[in-house]
Length: 136
Image (cartoon, rainbow, N blue to C red; front, top):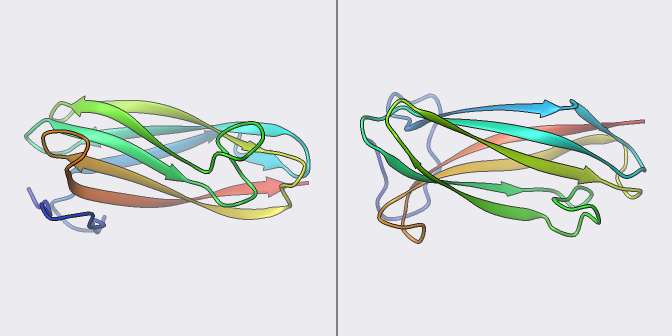
């Protein structure tokens, strides 16, 4: 395994020793501008290593989107638990827009983090950039 024991290092997804495969899907595929609505982000995390990995998921949203109906909550960390070798787990995250959400594409940062012993000790972090499209 290629872990950085000393901190939060973004893993290059093109490398050979990537511990996870992260796949995402949104339903519906977009939000509507200037009205309260939401979409669900489905995240599948597959452990590619030969060892179980204690895993968490972190999401950070821009100003005009949120993780609750009033869009005040901008980031969230989910403790996924231990993922066995070659197995996958899925998480669902609801993303909200409101009357202040304008037309455009919004960048969302999604990070999958592997931990050592407990959730306080970070071994590695893989970041996957996403975009949420908002239409009229």
